[in-house]
Amino acid sequence: MITLQGKTIYLRALEPEDLEFVYAIENDEAVWEVSNTQTPYSRFLIKQYLENAQQDIYEARQLRLAICENNSFKAIGLIDLFEYDPRNQRAGIGIVIQKGEDRNQGIGSQALGLLVQYAFSHLNLHQLFANISSENEISIKLFTNFGFEKIGIKKQWNRVATGYTDEILYQLININN
Image (tube, rainbow, N blue to C red; front, side):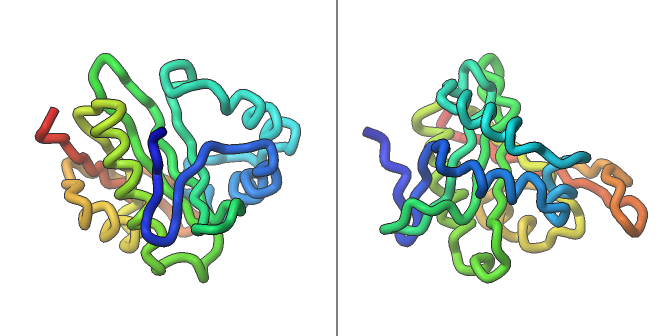
């Protein structure tokens, strides 16, 4: 069995019990900017999504995992592989930690490290990419600490309350594949 276990957290598949947690994150307007969400999601749609969460990455082209603290089943964040492209062996990667007090505690770093290692060693991906707002200094630091390199800037890409922000494309290439 593949264990996605870190020092203080682990990653697990989504379960029906995660309905309220996923609903809260998907409907948190503070997260919409980083997730490119435009409208709220209903509990009905989230429930349907969770019912189909058993699809593997080859069917869904996405893998979404809950981030949990050791000795707890309760999710504190989500980490995703998205736009999975098996032909070109690449996927996007994104992460969100729900509560501010859980951020800057090393949780995101552990989760990212676990998923990068899984993507390269078990899915045999050649590259991962991340789209990060130029104003999101914490995420930029997180991803660059793992070797993601800035490869491009999408000028005025995302509309925010104060106007437009650039989005930076980061890439990590698996030199062993």
